[in-house]
Amino acid sequence: METENEHTKNILGLKLPTDPRWVNLTELHLEDILTDHAYCEQKAATTCISLITKNSDKERIVEELSPIVTEEWGHFRTVLAELKKRNLKLGRQRKDVYVNKLIEFTKKDGSPDAKFLDQMLLMALIEARSCERFKRLSESLDDEYMRNFYRRFMESEAGHYTLFINLAEFYIDKNVVRKRWAEWLAFEKEIMNSQAVRGDRIH
Ligand SMILES: [Fe+2]
Ligand SMILES: [Fe+2]
Image 1 (cartoon, rainbow, N blue to C red):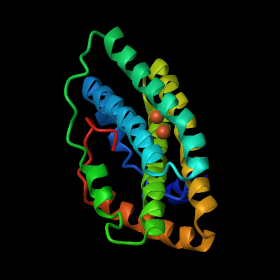
Image 2 (cartoon, rainbow, N blue to C red):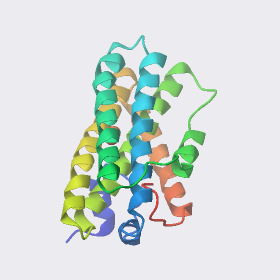
Image 3 (cartoon, helix red, strand yellow):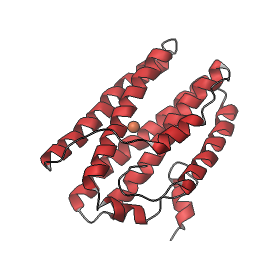
């Protein structure tokens, strides 16, 4: 059997696997986790729209992110329907500490290329971690219906991770992408290490 570390390395290069206790905690916070998940999907859709408008000179960005907007919005609606089915409310958006910390790592005063690269890698990283978390849920939840529910998200977010890395490498030198990606992965590991394990958040 592969070790936990090798296992996670296989999931998109992440440096720290999710604490196994997290899955059990989410089972106690279904409404919170669905709400947080819904807003993750909303933010993914919103961010893709903003990436298209900010990078309208980059044809591949416009072409390839447009269908992702639709897909992420579809995810939002799927989670919304799941809430409704269970008579649960969407409620207000929670403070997203994880994503806010990641945003702090983006280069604010770099060259346009450096800023663009960070936009792509920020998205790739959130997709990778979301994929890893959905994988955990799809493997370890008690409820078979919910395991299947999360498996579909896992597959979709894995594809998005790949897309953002490919888009980065299309516009920016691969060695530059690789070097900065390693920095992002190391930073994300620190964030994961510093956060308490709580079952009411996807990240
Ligand atoms: Fe999604
Ligand atoms: Fe996604």
